[in-house]
Image (cartoon, rainbow over all chains, first blue to last red; front, side, top):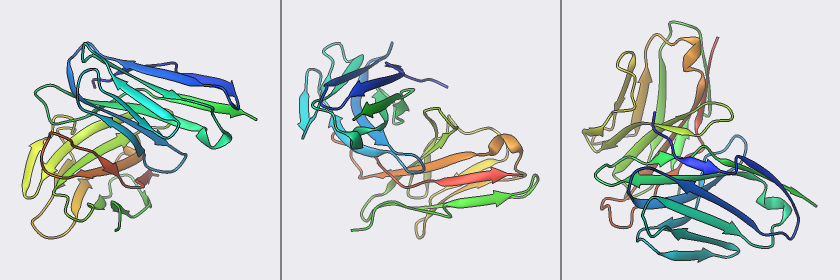
Amino acid sequence: GQQLNQSPQSMFIQEGEDVSMNCTSSSIFNTWLWYKQDPGEGPVLLIALYKAGELTSNGRLTAQFGITRKDSFLNISASIPSDVGIYFCAGRPSGTYKYIFGTGTRLKVLA
Amino acid sequence: NAGVMQNPRHLVRRRGQEARLRCSPMKGHSHVYWYRQLPEEGLKFMVYLQKENIIDESGMPKERFSAEFPKEGPSILRIQQVVRGDSAAYFCASSLPGATNEKLFFGSGTQLSVL
């Protein structure tokens, strides 16, 4: 099935560092959603984006909807140990109802 | 304000049996999505339903899988004659009507294990 290209696949960082991850697609998207998933749990919504160029923050998290409508990035500032988990982007291609998920970025924070 | 409720959390079936997974959306939500996730992978879209209607089932296998969202009661994902390859985590998400500022909220999932 169709998936978004999400990078990096995984990253180890030191506590206090900033983190950046992104998703790209060959299709135009109308909506971007960013999620965090902990083991054995469902994804939890972090940020939602609806317009090209939109920049939205949620605490230490900031995400942007790319101008071309084919990409989005998520930044986490001053990472802490509880940021550990898998981060997924999800996008809704123009003209469809379904949301396509990225392959995930596995974040590990070293104290 | 209860979130999306899925049950059971864990379901064990033998090959050839039927699996029924239930999803109760958040209060006021009338749209339900079902996704499947294998270990170390992302979520794969299966089906999108509104009350009493299947809107997009392009991710559903043609055989053995079906989904419904009746006027009353939870959404049901049904897998007939399960095989080992059906073992996965199945998540449902719900959203409010209206595509402008849609947000999907997920349940905790059902882990299906086929012996």
